[in-house]
Image (tube, rainbow, N blue to C red; front, side, top):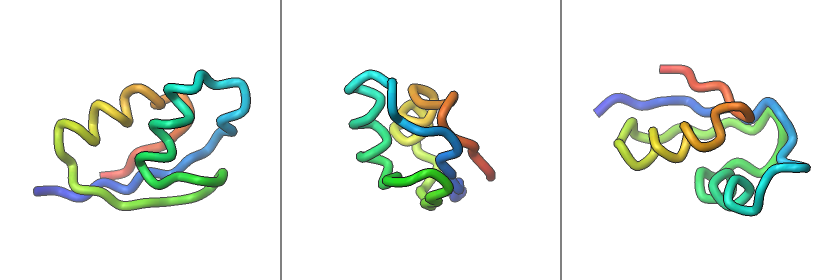
Length: 58
């Protein structure tokens, strides 16, 4: 399966608790933090919930 690189580009301050927990579950802690994950439907769904806070690269 393909890997995707997820980078947090905006602060989680002001976001809902659900969005903060989603960022934490993805492994993102700070702005400009980057993680790599397999492109599973679960990960894609999590990214969709916080798409306004992150950038995704294939």
